[in-house]
Image (cartoon, rainbow, N blue to C red; front, side, top):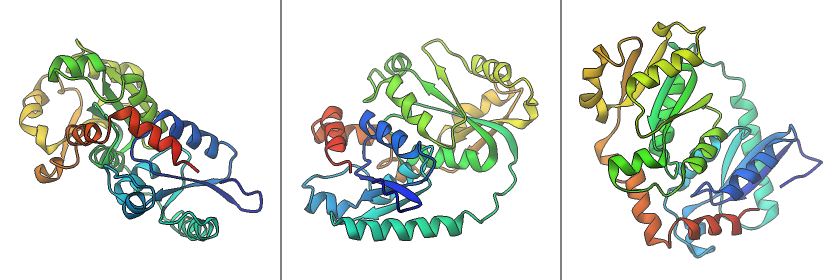
Length: 270
């Protein structure tokens, strides 16, 4: 919502599936230079008032919305009353101004990269990217293409390579995006990183993986990853059962498929 009398603007929506309509609205909302916020409808409100079930929790959807470039603050919404929404947005804006005063901690590495499909961006992706950003000044996302995912898992992602890249490009944590195609090797990734960032010493570059991939990737620390650092971050196996692209893919189909969810997002944007 744009209001010339306020120092900020905001948009309200579901933010369960980050579709083109959401990407466009966020881009438009953030471009005028004002502080920009996003209000996210709560689980209960979606179910009781919008008559729809969401895949991701309120907190998860808020965290995803907060990660987007140009988004300064987020807040939960359980009403259609514009005056009440304005009050919620005002409080969130004031909290944002207070938090902005905090100093950022120094980083351990100059650059880190994460590898993944990032299909239907969810909390697991976000936590992994956030932990990488806590370690590094710059974060590069190495995005697996549709063809690579299909080759390795015999299935297609819900969102295309182009759509998934567009979502990652919205994220303030992501400095750049590379692609992992069918024949891309680990050594290819390292060489591409070193070529793109020739001014960064390999000693200040790190590949960041979840702990679930430690057994798979650790042997390569002495071969393919030998020029750079490798860090494994904690990842709960129990949490991955309900916070993963596979899980959300199943829930997506149970709710009419990706196109139905994208249409729902667009219909409930304010």
